[in-house]
Image 1 (tube, rainbow, N blue to C red):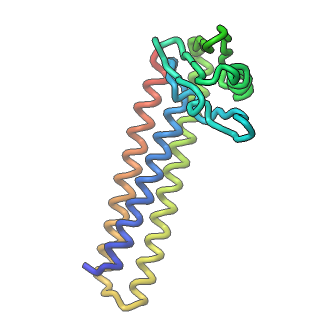
Image 2: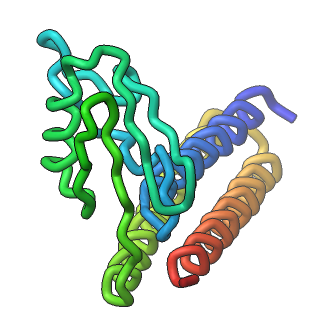
Length: 187
């Protein structure tokens, strides 16, 4: 098989894998009723003039399914972390206990669960769109290879392999979404 063809296929698969990883990261942020340190991912504070993720300024743990404990290494930023969590509008209110922040994660209402499922579906659809765009770009590259003199049957095999990879990754997106939907809707 031609090196250009292999490169095109590998590049497409790598892009699709990246879309899948991005989906997994985004879906992890969606709260499914159980407390987890990932819920605070993306929350930043102004730490000595630099916007810094709170997980780089504090120890974040989840001792049980209903709590998150944030223990800053520098006690002077406790108030900043508390304000940042409130400003992030994540649906919970941290309780300042002097040395730590205790966040009690409230149980999800049915309406909130449905909203989270909608968000999960939107993230999954974005991943599918990314995968389809990668397929389209790879197919355009394949057509250009045909113009460059690569045999037609090799280009057709490449297009077929690109479609198989697309179907495989879209199937993985659907599986991830199904698991997350069940996780969110389980009381």
